[in-house]
Every structure is written in structure tokens, then in C-alpha cells.
Image (cartoon, rainbow, N blue to C red):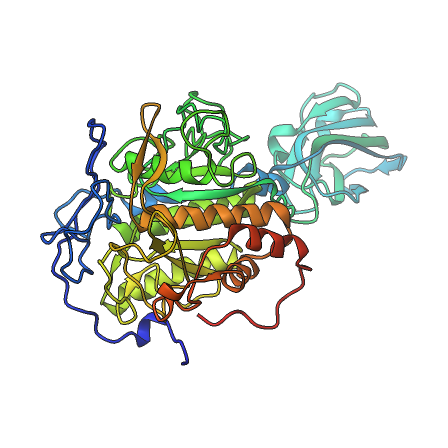
Length: 536
């Protein structure tokens, strides 16, 4: 069967019975139900079978839909600057001092003008300029002395001043007259004798200039090459970076100073120490809804191996960047676009080694305009070589093949979509959706223990928990072989699955994640551009 997953070619989706709801703040009960269900207890892609869901089921968040009456921050509030690193070439300048002199010993005759020139070959923007002049004349009140720059700007040094006194001699500060002018080119000194009876000699003159080199032009340096441990950006509610299992697992922005209220790295966000809050346009990743969900996802990826709670799959091998506030401020799509712009900028202009994005959220978008925007945003990730690991829906066995589920069902080579296995990893979880045209593989997503805000750990179930398992496996692969591209890692994840009879006809590979096989394949892979990408 030929698989096509382009949004523009998706048939009309199945009828939805649920309503979009936003994730809630954490409950305090030990065995909490943290689902954000629709009317039928599902996320809207259900088959009506709700009784079999585990009590700790977590519905895949869908964020907000556009609401014209809701206050939304203007787009201009989310303009990310490239940062000081990228601007360094334009801001850099070198202080320079130059001198030039001439000794014309030229006669200054009655009612005539004599000129003399000096030149500079460096393009220096002038901060200061001094004229050193030795002009002998028996009646200096006869003289008009002027200096003209290469651009044609003229400053008067003396205009028939001094009466019967002799000589125009000394140092004259002309900095104000020529401030910002370029020194490069020919400077002309003119001496005009406006009367009879007295003559003189232009013995010597010179210029002392100081300024900054303008250089050959505004050339930006190459952006820093991303280095260090691979980073997984968790797009979700914020991650509790103070949790004992996560405090050392978080990405920390080396260009920021915590708590000073200054955008130290020039990227457009103040105090973005561990990530960015798209809903509130701030560095406070924990502000807003869904922090229970985001913190749980992050712990599955990278919770520390410290003898407490759980140990993340990529513990000690990868870092987590929190992109919080996904369910606040604006609709899900707009917030996703803002988050993508932030992480692409941080990778390309600031050297953050962002290799994967975990998307344990999603919703159906039937209109072509929204589908186009989703595609464009994920294409930006592809262009920046960032893998998107996305959760399929929790539809109790519903088939997602003909659903415009975003961003999971986008047909791009950097996208891999995940269904959930049960706690025993031998069957598709009862709450999970599937789709052999749009879902690549499955991973355990039932009764997964992980971190929650406040320094605790809890078990949750859902495709939201299966997805970071795959994202963490991808991080291990990038750590084992940093030269791999996002498309190559996706390809290897697809090729190394463990085939499971229960998944035949439900996911395109008929298989479930095999972390050991995937990491081994990554280690042995020779990172050359692949001739083909596994068909989605």
C-alpha cells in the first residue's frame, strides 16, 4: 500500500464527539485521575469504549482553539532576535588613529588661492579630527582658511580673523564639523588671500584623526555549531526544574543571568534560563496550566539516576529544554509556531544542541489554512534538523488514518508518530488510537512512573507517556552518534522495531520500540546522506 500523509490530501475526518478542553493544574490525591476528557471521556477520536481505561489515564492535551474575544498577546511581542552572537560582526569595530601631513611651502599671493591635499586609504568613521597648521603671513586678517573632506563637506578654520597679527599657526579641533565622516580619500586645505600688500607661505599642515574602522561591510560570523549533550525540547505545560530528579537534567542557557530581568543573550526573551513560556512570552516556564503533564513527560526522558523515583531513559545522556505555557495565552497552533521559532533560533544562532521535540499533544484541524500553518512550522524544524516525536490520539482503538490530526499526521521526513503499548508491552493499550498509514510504532505508555511538580512521582497512562519514551531513545541515538540527522534517526527507529503480532495493521511497521537495537544501529551507522527515507 502506498502511504500518503500530506494534510491537503486527507479525506474528511471522522465525526468528533468530544470538546476541546485545556489541561488542568495538578491534583493532590495520591491516585489521581488527571484526564482532560471530552463529553464521552475521550479526546474526541474515540470508539465509545471508555470502561477499560486505567484510573491514572491522562488525555492528550489539545490546548485552546482560537477565541476572538480572548486577550492574546500581539505577534510583535514574540519577535525573537538572532542574539548577540549573530550580531557580533555588525557591532564589532576597532579603534584607529591616523595621521597625514604635507609640506607644500607654497606661496600665498595677494588675491589668490593656494590648495594642498593629504589622503587616507582606510575607511575610518571619525570620532575626532585635528588640523595642525603652520601658515606664515604678515597680516592674517587677509586670509580665509578652509578644510574640505573627501565627501565635499567643508569647515572654515579662519575667516579673516586676527587683524594685523602674523601667522595662522597651531592645532585646530574640527571634530564636531566632521563627526562620523569617513577619513578615506583626499582632504583639501585651501588658503585664500582676500587683500593686497601682504603675502605669506603655507609651510606645512597635517591631520590627526581617530575613529573606528567601518570594515568591508556588515558581515555576520558563522553561527556557533551546536555542541554538547543532545537537547529534547518538551512542548507542554512547564517542567518543574527544581524537582530533585530534574534539576541537573535541565538545559541551562549559558547566555543568561538568572533573575536579573535582562535579555542577556539578545534573543528577545528575558531570563529564559531553562526554556521559554510561549503562552506568556517569558522565561518563567512554570507559569500556566499543564505543569503536571509537562513535568511527567520530562521525567520519562531524563530524570536523574539518583536512587529516587524513576530514572529517565536518557538519564545523564541528554538535557530537557522546557517550552511551557502551551495551553495558555493563545491557541495551540499559534503557541506551537512561537515555540518552534524560539528553538530554531536557539539552535541556529546560539548553539543549543536541540535534536528533538516531544509533542505529547494534538488535535484535529480540518481547515486547509491551519493545515498549511502546521506544515510550515514543522518544515522549519526539518530545515533546522530537529526531529518531531508526536503522540497519536487516545481514542480507544480508533483509526487515525483519515483524520487531520496535527502535528502527528504530517508527512515529513522528520516526523515520527507514536501509539501506546500496555504496561506489559505485549499489546496495544486499550486507550490508544492507531493507524497503519500515520503511526510508525508503539511504546509503553501505561502505568508509567515519572516526576510531577513538588518533588513527587506518580504513574500516568496515555499516548502522552509513550511519546517521550521514543524521544528519549532518539536522544540516546544522537548521543551515540552526533552526526546523525533527524531523518536518519527516524529511519533507524522505524527499521529497528520489534515486530509484534498485535500491532499488525495498526502501525506502519507492525512493531514497537526497541531501544537497544535502535542505539546499536545508531552507533554503527555511517552518517552519510541516505538515498531514501523509510516510507511513512
